[in-house]
Amino acid sequence: MHTRKYFLRFCLFSVLFQANISSALTQDTPSEITVYPEVFNVTTDKNFSSYRQSVIDFLQSQHVHKTNNICILGEKYTDGTKSAWIIWNEGKKLILWDGGDEPLSISRRILNLNKDVVSDEKDINGSNYLVTRSWVRKLKTRCDKHGIKITISKSELNPIKNKK
Image (tube, rainbow, N blue to C red):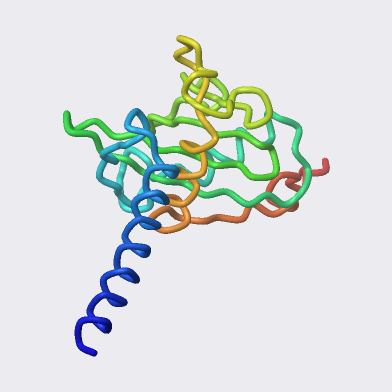
């Protein structure tokens, strides 16, 4: 009786273990396994303290006149440098910001989520600009967990002009 019970437990364990291994293998290919940079809060870093105004200026440069939701993920790299990913959901853009007073519109990376995202690594085909859907999904998950979320209202984008 005990032998049968242990055998059934072993079978159940084997099935569950096999399912977990298969799931893990299909989620990340070896080329996608990444060690993520340390995160930091842009609201407390003096080089990124203008985050809200920088986003407003960028949205205005894009002629946006409606409320927008933004997530900002600060990342600190092993060499000590910092940057932040700005995820603009309504505009379908990812913007890499190095902080300071440089306008977001001249960022070294502004990714269009409709054009610059491919299915998987093989579709990158040597490009240093394209990213995978998996990478974007992971960035969004990290931002949801560790980033700051801001809402830029329509009124902030359309300030009342002074009348003379």
